[in-house]
Image (cartoon, rainbow, N blue to C red; front, top):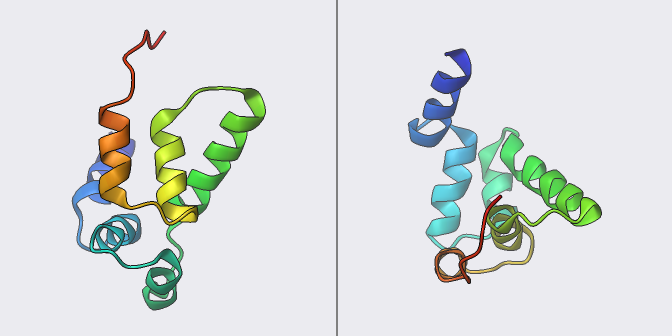
Length: 94
């Protein structure tokens, strides 16, 4: 239950660094500017890159991770990332 409460806090808490990064990206700010003003580490930023790199290396399709990576590291518009993930071709997820 500790993990669950941490996940809920990360998603909803005003003090969550990762949530702050996401909210600011949604407002159109650039990642570098957000991180400079944050003053603390947002673990999810580096974790997203590690997950992306691992999925590419191992050949595992992870569409959400790839879109998050593109928003964080390729300056993709977050709104477009949502559209792309929601309108991608349906397929079996097994």
